Amino acid sequence: MGQDKIMEVRMIENGTVIDHIPPAALFKIISIMGLDRDTEHRMTIGTNLESKRLGTKAIIKINDRHPSPWEIDRIALFAPEARVNTIRNFEVVEKRTVEVPRSIEGFVKCANPQCVTNHETVETAFDVVAENDGNIALKCRYCEKLTKNFGTKFNPY
Ligand SMILES: [Zn+2]
Image (cartoon, rainbow, N blue to C red; front, side, top):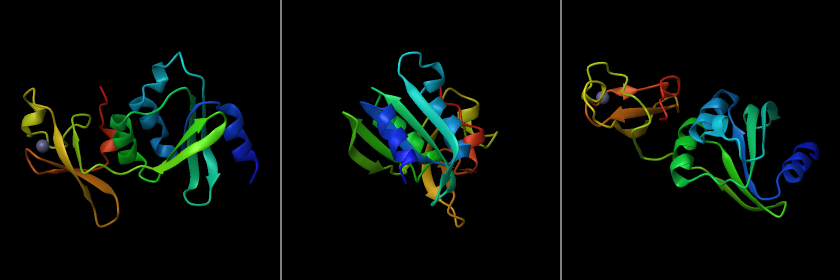
């Protein structure tokens, strides 16, 4: 114990610690939250850290910044095991798990090149479905095709 805890608590006075992020999802979450363009908030990002549950994990600690519900929904798509901890006065005052949303609008492109959303200015809309292998896929409401591995195609802006 110790080390991780000490760092977590010492670095953040008020803010958020997002823990249990799969390392492969780290940069997506950075992008979702716009942290790559954030010149205001002090933050610490660690990756490929040891995790009993995930093998390896990444962690994001940000001062004076709390993810919005919109951001949490999208974080959950890429890191369904993530924990979002709220820190006040160096104390964890709230620990919560994220919940994978049931649907998602915009944000991800439909994998079907024929889909109307890829030809007209129609915002994409998907139902989130669980595959047999436990992975998440997105079912398009327009063409019903499944978009898988959407993490590689996502377009957050
Ligand atoms: Zn579609």
